[in-house]
Length: 364
Image (tube, rainbow, N blue to C red; front, top):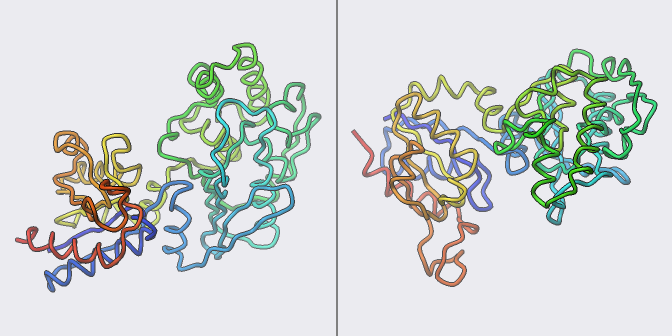
């Protein structure tokens, strides 16, 4: 039997570690099974780990004074810069001074000292609202208005020189990695990032119009066409700057799948196993699980899920393309809050045990 294991992070286990634990349990029950383990991850929530596993590279944490802290790795073929999430919850609404300049400086530092064919930029941990003006500033763009002071500094911009930016990037392919929930996010207009964030906290319409106008001024000078791309508004518009420079916008699962040829592997599998820390009606297992289940549906392959905790009805589960789901933690077990499982403390041993039990019911 050929089984594809493609999960999200489960508890503290990375996608790759969780996948290996599930595969180990499956082999215990079915020594003849053929298993492929593919690491996947969401922007800001496991993508960096998954990509490092694919590249057999080690992540390092880098910080600069007054700049965004990032994780990165470098190889000749692919490299990564991942904006580290804030320790506290990001502010809601519009922040006129929030800037992406730290990520821009990190990109410049990497490209100055290391050439790579493809550079992945995980923007999931970045909070800004400047349409990537800070990124352009960090890369050396020159303008007649400050690019590193958020959208507030863009109101009077009329000139922008990107020649040094394009020279620095050279032949390197840029890939912006955005959260799945923001993959269709627009940059401008009523469906744009300013409108969504502003309406979320009932911001004064005049302030929203001023912010949107500032982003529109920048877009008109950089690349007007790119402002209409799906995902251009992700990460406060930071994804727009990458697209405007000729890069692409992908979700974390899409990027991992493309890198390893997941579609081809799925087409020869007989069963697909996915998973996450929590599979509930609200999150529907997260972006990775939804992505894998959708791919399995398209390939007409049965898909099952393992999760630290499962709180979803069978009808909702099957509308996603998941045949059945199996909880690792039961009420009263370690990793519960009172009697309610949380899925946070799933161990590799637990995953292996549950996978072995499931494997005995999925064989033909």
